[in-house]
Length: 330
Image 1 (cartoon, rainbow, N blue to C red):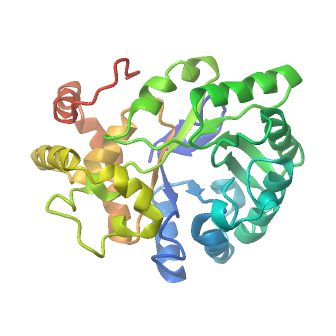
Image 2: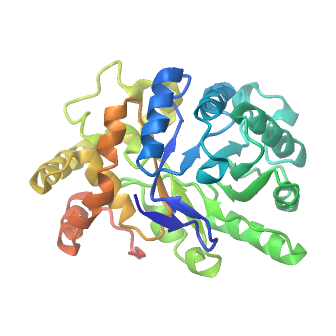
Image 3: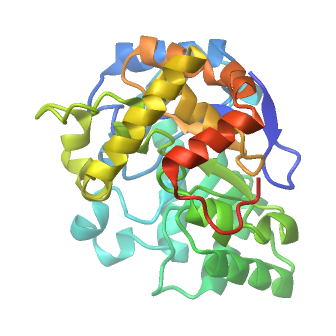
């Protein structure tokens, strides 16, 4: 496992990390989740991603039980939470139980600490931008949580470059701690934000990225090349909003060609897709999700496989994807 700096911070994160979205307390129980976390840790993963809204808080509670059982040295791993949606989601949370207000972010942090059974969060994200809360309030809140020792770094998820820069301007104005990282979706099919929109702020503020969905909700595994079965993970209600975007025949046609290229290189399609994200130097870490240990072990092969992605191979991939942003940074 190789490690990369999280933006301009000195924090070293494993280039592949492990997240619990959709799987923990939804698809798998404690024993399977524990085996996955052990496998990840033994393979050099030091970052475990979570959020308040995952399985209505049960994902964090399950991860907390496992961390308590494993008794890893606390200085050997990073754990995160994200707040905005509330534990019950936007629709079912009360007004004070969601958003990026001082009240919700503070209480969400305390609740995450309890569920995860840790004394502090290494990374704490605003899970989405909040149009109803002044950015000054959000930045001050995150700064104060750091000052109180409850979180170490704060960041954003699915914010625009403009919103991130507004947070940095407020931090600069009041001499506060700015966001260190952003957690955007990034994969072969979704590229614009990471490769174009953020291209300048990597340089200006040293933005780190902890990218999610490197396999486009399973589309890039190649397992749906011949159709999506009714019991497929992509049909879960939690993924319906992504499925609408990803279930396109043009995507499947591209993945079929990419699968053939992967076979030519002697690797699996998931490994090719993950390795492709790792070729981008602005990706601090790629968050992997898995419900089976065998899947996770296979995905870790991407660390070495990225060396197979020469300039020539990358050009062949671009020819298949035919979606290169105008000014890619790598």
